[in-house]
Image 1 (cartoon, protein in one colour):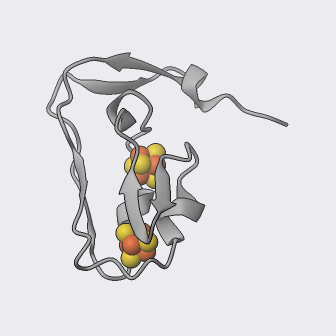
Image 2 (image 1 turned 90 degrees about the horizontal axis):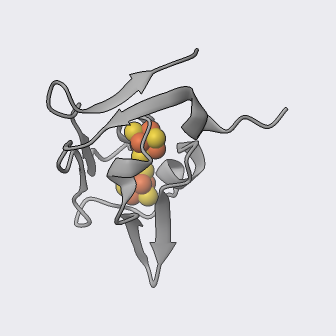
Length: 89
Ligand code: SF4
Ligand code: SF4
């Protein structure tokens, strides 16, 4: 069964950035690319990065930061009152 994860949540604008990567710690293991259900992590020219508009797609699950063994990814929940609101689940 295909699930459109975007339909599971409503979004409140104004999160600001809440995910960052320290590329000096990144080993290019690609665990974040594999775990992200929204496919927001990319690898190009030997660099891993998160897509520019991730704040409008991210489900705030924190999985990318959890699987990163070198703590290269910093995740914090968006400021209160912004971000996703779970509609179904
Ligand atoms: S999980 Fe961490 S170390 Fe691995 S590619 Fe992603 S940011 Fe880099
Ligand atoms: S928090 Fe979850 S949805 Fe957002 S980028 Fe990380 S793994 Fe993907």
